[in-house]
Structure formats: C-alpha cells, structure tokens
Amino acid sequence: MTQNVSETEQFEVREPEMQRIPFVFNSPHSGRVYSSSFLKKSRLDHLSIRRSEDHFVDQLFHCVTDLGAPLLMAHFPRAFLDVNREPYELDPRMFDGPLPPHANISSMRVAGGLGTVPRLVAENMEIYRGRFPVSEALERIETIYKPYHACLRRLIARTHVQFGLAVLIDCHSMPGNIRLAGTGQRPDFIIGDRYGTSASADLSRTAVSLLEDLGFSVARNKPYAGGFITEHYGRPARGLHALQIEINRGLYVDETTLQKKRDFPMLADAIGMFLSGLAAHVESYAPSTSAAGTPLAAE
Picture 1 (spheres, rainbow, N blue to C red):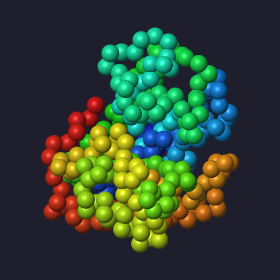
Picture 2 (picture 1 turned 135 degrees about the vertical axis):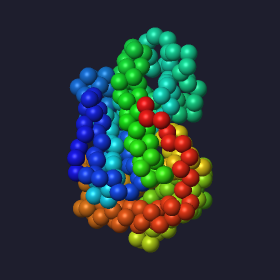
Picture 3 (picture 1 turned 90 degrees about the horizontal axis):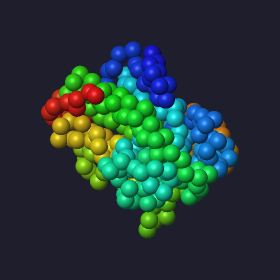
C-alpha cells in the first residue's frame, strides 16, 4: 500500500498497489487534527469539540486498500470545515464582514448550525467564542474544501474510466442513541442512497442484505439518507453510484471518553467481510448492467 499526502496535509489518499475493484471510499468526518489557532477560537474543551467527529471511521475502513480500492480521508476535523455540504453554506451571524452573494445563507443545515463552517457541534454546543473574519471561512473553502473535492472527483473519474462504472462509499458514524421513528429500533448501520436517486436499488438492497447476514440491524435512508457528497456524486444512470454508510458509534467507541471498545477489531473485520461481498456482487453484474456514460471531468 502507498500513501499520498496532499500538499496541504489536510487530507490523504491511501492507495492500493493496484486498483482492482470499481470502488472509491471516502471518510470526510474522521479528521482529528485540531490546530492551536482553531482551538483558541473555540469555547469548547478538548473532548466536547470532538463530538461531531466520525470517530475512527477511517480506521474501521482501513481494509479497503487490501481489497484494491483507494480511501480518501480528512485530517481536518468536521468542526473546522464540513466538506459534506455545499461549498458556501454559511451563516452570516458567525462572521465579521459580508458574505459573497453566492453564499447559501438560508439552508436548513445553516439554520441548524451545521453549515460548511459549522457553528455547532453535536448536542447543540456553540463552537466559537465570538465572530471571526469572513475571510478565514472563505480561505478554508479555497484551500481545503475545493482541493478535497477536486481530489475526490479525480478518484471517481479515474475509477469510472478504468471499470466503466464507479461506486462511491461515503463512510460515516452516528450517535449511539439514534432510534427509528415508530419502532424505537436502534440500527447498527444505515444505508443511504438519497431515496433511490444516488445508487441502484439493487446495490442498496445488497448492502442491506449483506450486513443483515452478518447479524447487524440495518435501516435504509432513515434518518440519514445521505448528504451533499452522496447526492452530488451519485448519478446511477451514468454508472456513478454513491452510498452513504452510517455506523452506530455505540458498537465500537465509548462516547463519553472517545476511547475504542474492545470490539473495535471485530467490527473492522466484519466491515471487511461486508465490503468483500459487496465488491463481489458489483463485479458479478457490472458487465451487464453498468451504464458507462461520460466520466466526471477531473478538476
């Protein structure tokens, strides 16, 4: 396995020796490098500010390079910048100075404090001590957000050209207290395909079935159907499929101390078995059902 660290060192692509399967894996919220300048702006302690992380998800999916697929992973934390948003979902109340006219200031995510530059971490805790210059937010978008997505697009385009289709797996975790409305069920995994618009129904059903066969409880699309990345890159009619996978953090991490549980290696192994089965399924149908279309242009 080789490792390519970006010029900014804000994210990294872990590459297999040779890509053998038409998959790209992405872990945009598992970054845990908090700069001193960011922490000085925050009112939160060292544990509270980490509440929005997808804790260790990049490590749960470490096996993908052995399977023959690349893994893009953030080093910057979600509390600093959320690349699973539109590039300019910004809350004007956070900043000194006017936002650019193309900023989306009225989305539900901005209203909820979870824009591209978040105002809150989980449990509605305010991140910042006060306003800060809008130029700092725009710099994060220019120097991290845009290069991150350019890298992701290149990986998807390369995969699409090589195999005639590409499957993006967007890797996330969810709080352990999530319950399904009406049933009270606590799912171990949620598969999101934007209600059938970002991936083929066959792929989604297979993902659910494989996880259930491993003994996990699985939901589809509720309460997490997929964010900006799943919606933006999933174009199944062109052979570009995107699934979001949410893993219940209660399975593998103590959510108070943020320490891994003893079951962490077993969950990672189970995820490896699941992904091996999903890759085998895609390889079995790809020649007859993929729609190659026109690949995404690499930026």
